Image 1: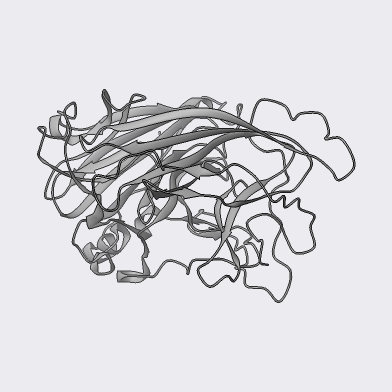
Image 2: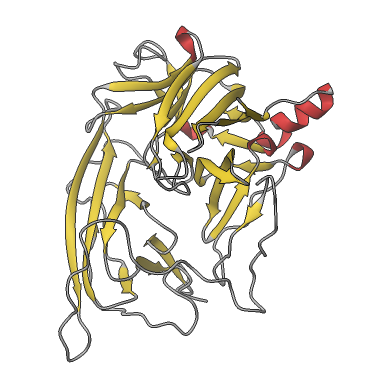
Amino acid sequence: GSFWFLGDDGSTAYLPEGGPAFSTAELPVTAAGERTQFMVTRAAAPGDFAAYSRNAEGGFPEADLSSRWGLPSASSQPNGTQRQPRWGFTAAGSYRLTMEASVELPSAERQIDTETVTVEVVRDGGASPEPAPTSGATTSPPPTPAPSGTVAPSATASPTGTTTVEPAPTTTTNPPPRTGVGGAAVLTEGHIDLAARLVDGRLRFRIHDGTVPGVKVWRDPEQVVLHVKPEGLRRLPAGLDFLGAPGETEWRLAGTHQEGMLWPGWSTETLKPGDITGGVTVTATAVSGPGHLALYDCDLFCRTYTAEFADRDGLPDSIEKPVNTHAHPSWGFTREGVYRLTLRMSATLPSGEVTSDTATLAIAVGNVDPYGVAPAGERAVLAGHSMGGMTIM
């Protein structure tokens, strides 16, 4: 259980003394709290891997990076520091890790650099196997359910895909999300995806909740409240005219992982070629709130921005995501308060029939108590009518 981020109890792992270190020693520290993020975005490897360290009390190891639950995986550290984690690998061979380092400058520009690091893991007294293929992510098998007597939620059948839980590791490091109004899951930090999946041959819009390491939950968007913490406040840089003028305020969820913040992305990873014809069209049909909202991407150095959705010039706005896509835009809000964003996901089945699902997300921005915000589903019940649901066109 101590190394849940690498494998189950009793499994084999290589735990060498050395491994890549993370250094921000040469970066100037101009303000308290400035950090650099290190992220493994892709890997070609014969097994899973993790970077880890002991906690302050020297007890159980804590994962900095882990491929076991999928990539990307990220950690951050203060500028002006150096850190040497321990590394673990589940198989001998050649691990090619595509790593990204990103830092936000005082000008609010984000500098990003990507490199590929190769780590050779050799069996004691023998040569390493042939290098792993260079395409795709890790080739290790998916995690197995926790053995009896350990803490792990059981999977539940859900014909509509409202809330299902996938197998968990033997231990987790974070508590499950707390609930708010109407039993809504309040998600305040960690990785989630706005996902499209097929359930009984029909497209469903669901939240893939991975905020608790090792526990993957499918949630109904209308039973969820997302929180953009006050720490997301910044001044808008130039180039975000679809959101506001330079120097105005933005509460942001960045497109790269930031410790302690929510990290929402898009996912069509459960869809395979042949499940649908073409991609999944995501349409923002309506938004309400005290300010403007935009989801946007930027180029390598975030000098040029492109809006996916922006309500400032009116909605609807649409984007298309191919099957097997996983991407993270930035989310920006111009004022504190509660926003409700209605999204429709639609796709064409091989038969030519179009299937779609619409749901409304509740988002608490800034200094707002997210546990007091009603999810969209609760508002629909109180109003005595249905908001969202699946339609067949």
